[in-house]
Image 1 (cartoon, rainbow, N blue to C red):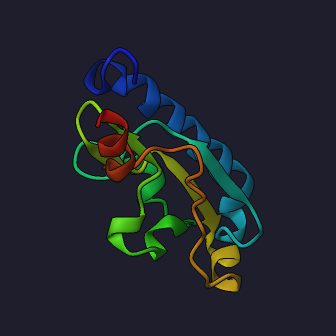
Image 2 (cartoon, rainbow, N blue to C red):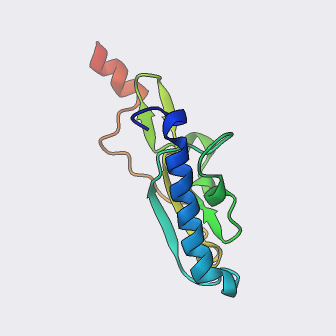
Image 3 (cartoon, rainbow, N blue to C red):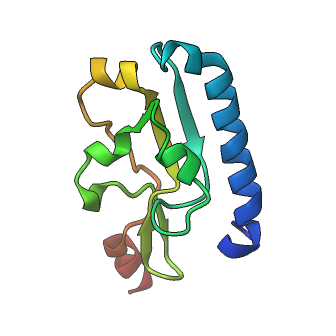
Length: 122
């Protein structure tokens, strides 16, 4: 998103669509029964107007970061806007998600928080 979220949206949407094509080609015939994971820094946050709708709404996958409380789902802090957003994702196949009920643990070592930014500016 270095050039801005709106300007780079189409590229992220195209990439998300291609990932869905790969998943559908491999797993649709089995109704997505199987063990597969889609994960990484997808550089867009969930919500209205996201380029990731095809992934977030896919019937064969579960965004397991949503298992965390809403205030713990962030994976990126933007100090310039004092914003906490989810840019990183762990999508499990629906069968794998059913076998693993726990929420993931997000390790934030090295990420600044508001408190650390305040301390650093004093």
